[in-house]
Structures are given as C-alpha cells and as structure tokens.
Image (tube, rainbow, N blue to C red; front, side, top):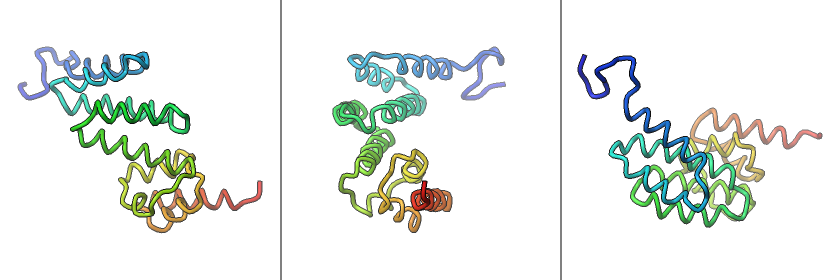
Length: 163
C-alpha cells in the first residue's frame, strides 16, 4: 500500500508520530531557561501541523500551571515572540491571557468573550477559574454553543446556592 503516511512495515509507527511523542516528552521536562529554545526547535520541524500541535499542548499545560501566578505575563510574552507567525498558537496565547484577565477580576470587554473561540468559552466555563458572575452571565446568555451556555448557567446556579 502506498500513501502519504504509510511505511514499509505496517506495524512501525510513522516517523512524525515518534517525533511528536519525543517533543511532548522533552517539552514536559524542559527547564524554564531552555523552554523558549526548545519550543523554537520544535516549530522548525518540517511537519508544521504536528509541530504546532505539540507546542499547543505544551502551551496549554504551562498556561494552566502559571495562569494566576506572577510568572504568567513574562512567560506569555516570551512564548508570543517564539510562536510569532503561527496563527493558531498566537491566538491560543492571546486567549490564555484573556482567561487570566477574567480569572483575576481585571477589566475585560464583553465583545472579547463573545467573539472568542469555542475553545476559550469552554475553558472559561469548565476550568472553574472564572469567578466573575458578569462573565458567566454573558456566556450563559450569549455563549457560542449550547454546551457553553449550559455550563455557564450551572456555574451561576452553584454560586447562588448556599453552602
């Protein structure tokens, strides 16, 4: 059988799958001082879709760990420089920054939440870091999907119930 993703040995894992797994492992254990260089190295992989996916997973993992702490801003700034020109990754960092803004109770614009991606809206309602009743109400009323609207409504109901 021939094709784009076949190998001579059908039991052998494709090379891009092996690289992806290696990248994920390396990104999970990288020292902070070496993180930007490793991300840049991964992004130079010729399989840009696979590289973006590996870096995207890394950004998501690190953002959750850093989200409400003081190191997030510098980390996000550095990563934004490293992923410049990669639309998906740039958007993902921008949306993590918006999640941080809302989670910390800093000012945000309603349009930022309602025009954000489905991913952002799901994260805002499932991570339970969005404590803003205004944000939850906005997503309960104007979330892009029924799933988001329902999750935001449930969070609001939980907040209103006495403990």
